[in-house]
Length: 303
Ligand code: GLU
Image (tube, rainbow, N blue to C red):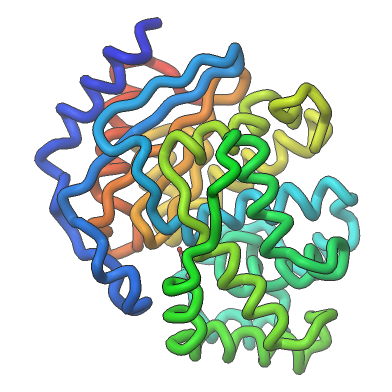
């Protein structure tokens, strides 16, 4: 398999979608992203890394952080977490309040904002600093010691995060948070506002292709738990368009409003594509197009 050629082909096929869609601006600090930027990286389980375009340029990882915080909590055992958050697609926008109230403060899945707040809350209890734990995990797995939270983005999220605050306060009223609301929100923003490149994220996501094994050969998750994370990514990882993403790309994946998408080819590789223009569901138009082209040309999907 010539991965480098496949990435060039994917970039060529995605080119018409670069600059399409809307850059997220509900977090004002994200609005400055360059709509013409595009990068894609692939890391294999045997240790090779390939990239095209802006694959080494850091961007705001936003909801892709939810993959890592979930895995870090599950490493301590999932039984308790799964009582506090479900694992069904939400069929609603990622920051919806209505469903959370109708379902008594138990979020549908760990990848919508309410669910990620519960995961962050749990990680905070387990580690004492959820944001630093996620950051250090990314630093280690990517081999990027300078990788860090963009304080400007985190601040911008905090001062404009009324919906997230509403979700968190509602869950606190249902006894579904262990830590103070302000602590949970600050830790959540610290992880969403991490800046990392496609290269960093492909390397950091590789443990899910290695069935739970980290870069140093130690195990974070059992093979069975890694399977469960990948299954949840497939069904819930790309907002309210997970069906369309599965149809086009056929891989477990997680998108973020910064325009990145991390996708896993179990047993083989992790990929990350990035371009800031989003479709109406919140997924990067060019990143989806590139991943679609990659799996179509390579035949590498879970189906
Ligand atoms: N920090 C963003 C928020 O809470 C994450 C959204 C996303 O990437 O899905 O709205």
